[in-house]
Image (cartoon, rainbow, N blue to C red; front, side, top):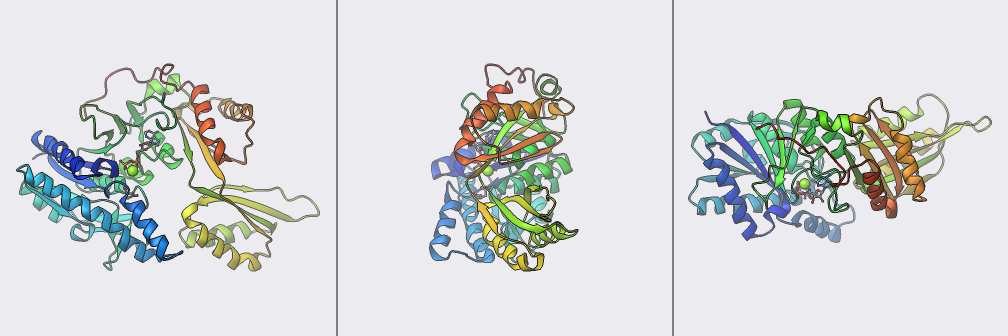
Length: 423
Ligand code: ADP
Ligand code: ASP
Ligand code: MG
């Protein structure tokens, strides 16, 4: 039996018909190696942004269901064109959307999670020798409603398919040559990492390294599918391998593996909430019921004589309208005060398995930001991550400074030696 390889090509990789023809060559190359190939594609170029823009021109608050109907069309164009391009080169190919396959998601619009993928039709087409071209980013509920997985979600479609089909590997082809120590478009001297563990990659993706969708990494970790992030335009380059193996070399020499920024959050301060048991539970419980994820949270200290707290937290910008509606609706019940919204924020983060049990990393981060004369508005930490909220305008400079102070600039770093395991 042949191995199954899942390949995923992002928007820039299929931006026009010439690029789609080159992608067909990359797909055929994998098939010629003797593998069964399933290809996941995103919408062409900036199609999804364009569709969002058109919706916003029609309605300030378009319904989530109709947004999914609209956005899912972008991938439909790419799969048919790529399938034709492969057929034109003399190979059998078939395009399939989520409904045809049975990529079943929960009943949530715009950020649905995949709960099951039917593999019977896929296996039959593979057994017949066909290359299958799948529409990324979309799913269908048990009731036949179209859903989408959240922006950047085609990565998750690819890894979930790889898991369902027990593929040997999932290759994510994109417009950079792998995962770097930070976004190479912000810091040109960023270093490509040859290997990263699922744990570190998950933190990096969650804090803004949008080269991979966080749920794709989560799914890969659960199913132990190796991911390779590689360049569509330099096919011989092996890119970055993401597996369960910790990169001991990095851990021993570097406390920090990567730096990232996230400009998509908004800070909300809910003022004067009475300092009594249950109020925080009520606030965040209501947001959770509405499927709104909260990231950083700070509750102020209630001083004597003023038995109220301010609670500050961050959410994704896309959830702002719904969140403010919810806060207004529970304000009276909580006897709370004003709501302040700050969207001029950026979250800058450092990530590294090597920072566990190493004192001084947080202090170095805060000192570096302080030396720039930048004020930190919020801080949050996990075992392998520290995040600081700063003003948007300071984000890129902070990323550059942190990248340098933690020895990640490409002329300094010594973590990319040695050959990769041949997966
Ligand atoms: P695709 O359309 O192929 O899914 P994306 O735009 O979603 O591509 O992801 C690739 C982009 O991710 C790169 O162009 C790069 O600017 C950005 N990026 C952010 N952080 C990193 C990182 N640490 N390593 C590599 N790329 C990164
Ligand atoms: N086309 C979708 C987006 O632009 C999904 C993806 O590209 O991963 O977000
Ligand atoms: Mg992407």
